[in-house]
Image (cartoon, rainbow, N blue to C red; front, side, top):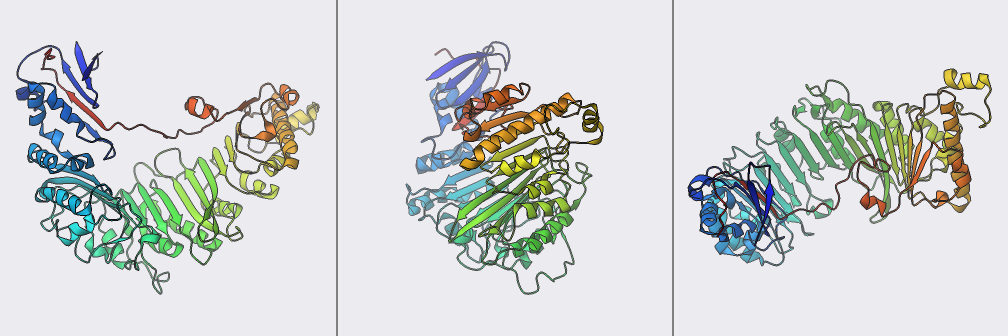
Length: 600
């Protein structure tokens, strides 16, 4: 069944027919002739494949059932049959063979998601149908979800890639089960890899780095395995350093818990030759502190590259000196200048998150996430702080970052789950942030911060103080703390009962004095306050006090408002999060202007 809709985007009197399957066909209503002879070379196909298993058949096959002309066109357009998804495998060998035959000699994209629905032997038998076509593979993605699945290991055992894959550009092998998977000592791929650009290997343990196709054409490399899946010791990293040195085209590198155990004397070993990535845009490392530092000190990459470091907890707690050493190594590694970035990156947004992980024993995980305002140059560091936080604290880590990087340009700071900090700590952390516009508190006590902020010597001691000398002092000689501050966001800030009234009155006192400072000629912006789940300053409370500061915007965000407010609202979010996106199974556009609408 088709629905018709007029449009002006594809030409005059154009018509779009939308089958229920999600296929979109665009053509003009003028002209005649056999579509199979004209459209085959003039269609523009864009196929977007959703998660396998979402549909039970190939959606664009419904096009072949519209009429004989459309069927002829679809069968002759070989590009339609080059993407073999899990939905194809679930329909049996007949459809797989038909796809292989109809795709001709064009490059293939194969995406298989393992499932417990299909028995392992049946899966292997179906997948074997494409073995003879491996020479035209452009992309191969295999995700094994079932604990019974051994497809990838069986492929290696039977040397499916023995003759190479000269057209292969993307290889992604993911073990999504809770069971460890180990490769054999034989090579995973053959030698004829002339086009490989993206290699992803997740959830598999490696006997040696030499089995991987770490070829010089790679632009993206992801090697990761959760520690709980590591069935045996990881291979030593010396061979990895040698292989990485050849990857000069690399743009994305992620190494997760596979860097390798350090060896005696690794920290004192002199690095004679650095591993240079002149095009690197994104670096992600997850491992223990010794493994990460052993890797970072060998790397050199552009200043514009984004770096994400996740330090895994070990039995011995890390010291602050370890973090300081890591930051020095990171700054030394980020030394290559490019035409896009000639200067040191300036961070404008920082989010500090503290969470408690319940493993064998509770562990506090602290994360500092710095943003530059662009897709590149960001820095994120996540590490365990110890059982009680006595080893590494928010303030001490902040101090290390401040000594290594310029934090004076920060415009937004978010604190999530951070514990109680003293006024002295707030003073040391925030006093130098002259460009700060926004402070966001989430599940973080705020009374001590407000008590510190209201002690700003530039604020009037009382609202009624209007002496000329005081005005002149405030305007000329005294610059307020956080002179650009314009917005507070409080989200789920729960205080002790004895702190609630004092926190509310202290906040209102600061807002009123800040407004008086503005009236006296001080160049400070108007303040905004947004509150969500803050019972200490609920809507309707302190109406008399708030009426004295009518220029200050105080708003309350309800839980329902979070779904209705868009990014243009500007009252709550500094950025936009992409949540609850709806993905269509297939988005196929076929465009031409030579085939009349078939009225039959």
